[in-house]
Length: 447
Length: 179
Image 1 (spheres, rainbow over the protein chains, first blue to last red):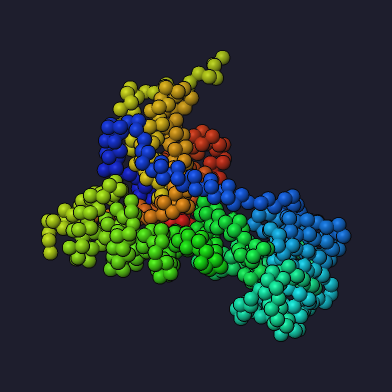
Image 2 (image 1 turned 30 degrees about the vertical axis):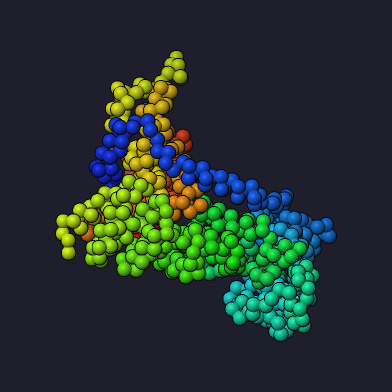
C-alpha cells in the first residue's frame, strides 16, 4: 500500500485562523448571500464557449472498428472515417480510428490505402513490424510486405519512420529499402529525400521531381505514393513498440518529457486548405484551436502548450494566432514557469498591442518575480500592465508593482502604486491585507 | 421490522443557522481548500456552500450525519467551482496566478506560504475521485468504509482510489520540488 499523506502536507492545507474568522464574519453578516460578482463574466464566458462550439461544430468521424479490432483485408474497401479506404490482402489491427487520428498496424500481407487529400480526418499512420511507420496525409499509397521490401514513391510524399534511424521523407521518384534486419532502411534514390532535420521547407505547389510549379492545390490532390517494404510479422505477433504517432497533433518539440514524437507531413500539405482560394479552412482552424482548450480542460497543459505553439507557428498573422500564443503562455505557467517566462517575452516582442498584452505582461512579471525571484525584471511588466490593463488585472498589477518596488527600495513608486491599488475597486479581497501591510511598512520606516 | 426510511440521524442538532455556520465554518473551508485546488477562491466557495446548505436545511432528512450531508454539498459546490475556474482559465479570465513571494512576515513564513501553494497545486492535479478519497481518509481521518459511504462507492473502491491518489500526490509533490 502506498504511504499516506505526510503530516506537513496535511497541515499545509489547513485554513489559517484568520481565514476562518473572516469566513465566520461574512457568514454572520450575510449568511445566505452568495458572491455573484463573477457571474456576469461567467455568463459571457459561457456564451463565448457556446458560440465557439456552435461555430466549429465538429464533423463526425463515422463508424469504424473499435481499437484493437483485427480486420482481414480484401478487395472490399474498409472505410475508416470519411476520407480513408483500405483494401488489400492480409490483416491489420486498428489501433486508433476516431477524431484523434487513424492508426493501423499491418500484421501480415499488404494494405492499399486511399486517402482523400481534401477530406477530413485524412491523417493516417500505418505501422509495420520492425518499428517502421509510414505516415501520410492526403495521398494514395500501398504498403506490401514480403521477404524483401522497398518503398517506391511515384507521386506525392510519404514519411517513413524506423526506430534507431532518422525519419525519411520520400518524395516522388525516391525509393527506400529495408532488409528486415537490424540495419536501418536505405534510400536508393536520394535525389529528393531528406531527413526531418534537413528537410527543406518546400512549397506545396511545386512538382518535387521537376521543380516546376504546378497549379495551386494540385500537389495535394494529385498526390500518389506507392510504398512497399519488407515486413515479416513479428514472431510474437505483437505490434511494434514504435511511439504512437499522433497525426492530429502538431510537429513540435514540447516541454513535456512524456510527449511522444509527432509524425506528420509537411505543413504545406497538412494544413487544411480551402479548395476554392487556397486560404486556410476556417472551420478546421477553429477545430484545431479548440483542441488547445480541450487539452487545458483535460488537465494536460503540456499538450495544450504544444498544440498552441504549433497553431501559432503555422498560422502567423491569423487572428487566432496571437490568442494561441497567449494560451501557450498560460499553459506553460503550469508546466514550466521558466519556459512560460521566455514565451511571454517572445509574445510581447511580437505583439506590441492587443487585448491580451496586459495579461501576458502580468504573467511575465509573475513568472519573473515568483520563479526567478527577480523583482527588477518584473517591475517594467507590472508598470506597463498597470497602465494598459483594466479591472482586476490592473488592480493586481498595481498591488504587485507596489510590493515589488518596496522590495527593491523604490519608495516613490511603491507608495503611489500601493495607494492606487487600495483605491481600486477590483483589488482582490485576499490581496488587500498585504497591500495595507506594505503601505504600513512604508509609512513606518521611510528610507 | 425497522422502517428503512427511518432517518439514522437526528435532523440538525444545530439549534440555529448562526450556530450552524459557526460550527462548520472551519470544516467547510478546509474541505474547500483541499478539494478545490489552487484556482478556486476558497472563502468565496465556502460561502457558497453555506448559502446552499442554509437554503436546503429544511430538506435534510437525516439519512446521514449532518457533517456527511454538508460534505456532500461541499463536494458538489467545489466541483462546480472547479469547472467554472477551468472555463475561466480557458477563456483567459482566470489565468492569473498569485505570486507566492509576497506573503507578509519573515522568511520562514514566506517558505510556508510557498509550500501551502505548492501542496494545493499538487492536490489540484489529482483526478477528482483520487483527490476525494485522499482527502477523506488521509487528511480528514475517515475510515475507508466511512469514506465509501460519503462518496457512495464500495470500500474496496476507496482503497483503490486511495492507492492511486497517494502515488499521484507524491509524484505531484516531487514535481513541485517538495517531498
